[in-house]
Length: 241
Figure 1 (cartoon, rainbow, N blue to C red):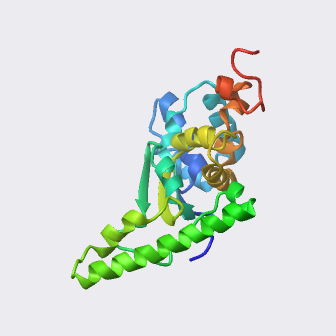
Figure 2 (figure 1 turned 30 degrees about the vertical axis):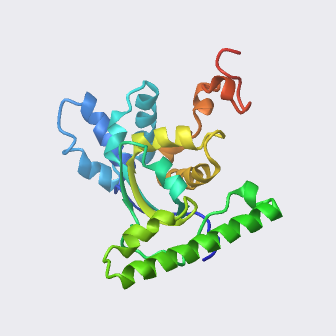
Figure 3 (figure 1 turned 60 degrees about the vertical axis):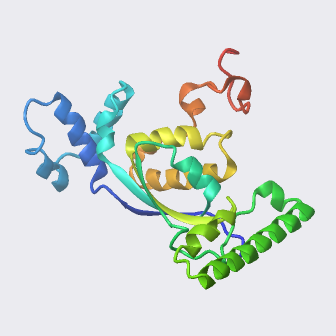
């Protein structure tokens, strides 16, 4: 058992993402088939700068659905169950999470909240609690196995904490990612998912800056905070402008 931290890895993304978004946008306004245009895009006959300018102009008009054709797949390692419960609320997305039914957790790693880590006595009690839970889990699992229960992991996991580390594969299309970043890079988002969202955003910006260059909290796009009385103060709250 040990304290751990979230690590985000980009596993894969749709090939030629800018060209695909450009082709999808062009199909909406093009009388012919973009299948005829596709080889020219792949060969570089249509410069990336021209594609980026066209995509940016159409996005600014509010037409965003064609970016759904591009998706990114990440693996999130060392994230808590508290985080994954928040994460799976986001749609449209696909998730494949490490199972506590099939993966034994007697030596589970765990996340420590920053405020707990800053307080020595709180940290001591937190670590003691994790150790106690780990011991209890191991004992429960052994007792159930001794009784011949094949579902020992499944039942013993009920004592595991939200702090227990997990792994999850996440796939989202660009439109879902933009919405995710608006909500989860916000200063009002929970600290762990905010940190994960920022890692994901940096990876997306490295692949497709034309779409994600200005992605982030809603207040950056709106110029004001839509959270009202809950504003962090970074931007004027709606109604106070």
